[in-house]
Image 1 (cartoon, rainbow, N blue to C red):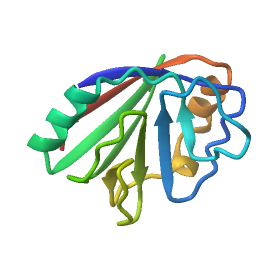
Image 2: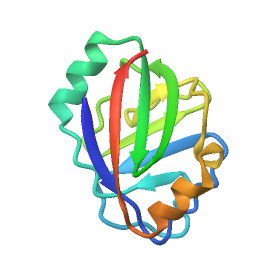
Image 3: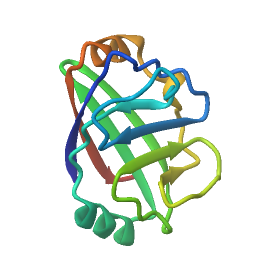
Image 4: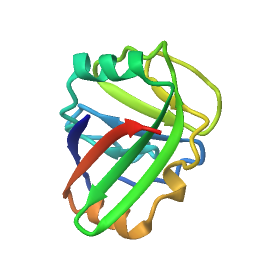
Length: 128
C-alpha cells in the first residue's frame, strides 16, 4: 500500500527509538520522532495489510532519497490518525511496527533537511 505525507519546519528526527507519521497538519518542536504530517493513509486499507502480514518494510521516498525500515507487524494496531514505528517491543494502538532496524535519528540528514522544507514524501508499505 502507498500513501503520502509532508514535512514541516519543526521536524528534528532526533528520537532514538521511534519514527512517527501523523494526519495532523502541524507539530511542535517536541515531536522529535515525527517525520511527516498530513499523512493520507487509508485506515481500512492499512488494517487489511496488517491482517495479512507478519513482517513489513516501510519505504520513505523523497526525490532521489530513499530510506527502508523493516519490522514486525503489531496485530493490535488500530489507530486511524498516527503510525508509529519502534525499535523496541513496546505495543500500543498506534504502534504499527516493532523491532524496527531504524529510528528517527538513524535517517538520512539529507532526507530530514528536505522534510524540514515541507516537501511531500511517498510512503510504501510492503511485505518483508
